Length: 436
Image (cartoon, rainbow, N blue to C red; front, side):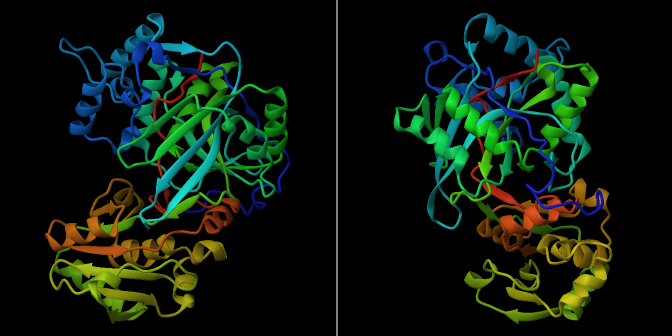
């Protein structure tokens, strides 16, 4: 989906980014105990069972406000969250820093590929700007439902409860070099989550380090990697309030595009509701546009690489694994007229055009509301859901290179939902950004 005319690449537009230290709200460990008991994964990956398990660790766990529940007697869930967040501040469970700071952050993790890495970034506040060159870029389409939910929560808590994960270009590594000396000291907190990721956080108040980070980021565009809904919600909230003030800023964690710990993994597509007509249309499209090779099951997931679209495919009826390779790039070019060359080579974009919309007749609304479509983060999950018959077929994807994410965003185009899986996720509850 095109959202604007061609624009310069990231970092080549006029200086616009406004990255600042923040006077954060955060838990007081002296009151709430270990931060491991009060932080949580992002709200959109937590089910009811996990929510209850997190609350069992501590009544101060952030899910109590990030995923609030209505109370008997008609108490609105969002009002409950606002009252509870205010009560935590009044009793000193959540406190505000006396002075602005940047927060150096590392995540040491084992990715889905089995490799151990460390991703380095920092928490800050960023002035909210409309999407555009020299400002902030999205890279995926968003859905209206999550934005309404987050807006209602923001109105009552008057805070950013979870950070937006964004990328910026820093080939020389100047920003992290300025922050790195602080990481030689013991971290402000260290948490190992359920996936084995070790999250470390250092508070940085050194004026020289802050000045270097501000100068380094002044000439860059910021590319949202995760948190599009929250950014657009923050923009809506800022316009509702009007005028200047803290509501014009949003909590972000920034990671350099060049950071060796930055990785993107694929999100696989699962199809359901395939009647005989759709099965026939799908089969004909695959036979027409792709070279099909039956492969051992353990080789069905395609490996990272360049070149035309390549997919793994298996359905619940035959349960034969195939490797599909687009027969000719011209097929994708013809299916995506008016899009950039980078987008016409985007696996998820070509798949959407040829198969989801082309063969199966899905609309943007179908895709947005998961009508006949679901997603799996691992090959094992995708295969299990198809082999069990819960879904009719799986389309296994290659990861989208970070450079391709950047190039597509830079020309004002948005990828289909779930085109990227940046791993690991950021924890919710490490820091909050007050909006009043």
